[in-house]
Length: 121
Length: 152
Length: 107
Image 1 (cartoon, rainbow over the protein chains, first blue to last red):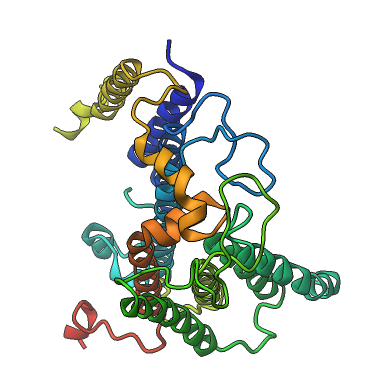
Image 2 (cartoon, rainbow over the protein chains, first blue to last red):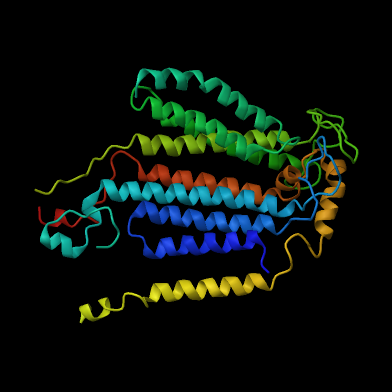
């Protein structure tokens, strides 16, 4: 059947997407987006495995049977770009929280209530 | 924060920076490299920023200067390869210059003098990532609410 | 009209989307090759065989990231720089949102 690593990847992606669909707080949505990125990176790394292989580094190497190094080089870029996206999203949420008179919905402006930290009410 | 946290964070600053520089400089021999070492150095600055929130004078122009310096150094290293063969060419590997010792195929204990232009690129990327992440943490920690209106 | 949609607590459209996504992911992972048996490895064998003589570094991943595919690293450094530049534009001191403020028209 399916190996255990692919099941973990499926669960990470589904949990991340369900977090984006069902949560209301901004910080929880950002954490869920981060979980989707982690699941995709895990899947990309697990594609290059070779049975009985060691890490592709020749310093004090034990054997010469190595796993493939190309997916590892690709997810370095992916991790850094996910980090940049998360940093931008977090600072946008700080901006939303600090300037409340910018993002009031029209219904709450008529009632005179302050906008809360959730995205929909 | 209390006094214990301030003293311990200042004491742990030097070993963290040295460890990060070790990971950056041995990027062509052991797992690690520019990005990983840069994040380690940035975590040292974030530790100091969280312990001393407003008591320390850190201007953001210093970090902006170092971040731009890292990226410009990387681009200069890329343009220097045009004199040999092409853009982004490893012009220091297998030469008799400063970082150009040849290495045979097989397992060996590493040599710091090898690698060509890879350790210099690691240093440039490490400086850039450390300055960029410290800058983001500095902006978010020292942000003051200015336009907050209170409803009665 | 709005209260009629609140009765369907179980078969929400979001739960249907999640179940369909789970089934599709499961079916696509079941038809893959087994874990640990790669099929075509010519490029990886070339990298492992020739990285030490051509670049002079023991770390094959570092030689791929900084020598064989250095253009991706250049693009990634520029993306990180641009994101931090965007963040520093948000947190300036005297931000003026006079285009978006509705209260200034009344004053």
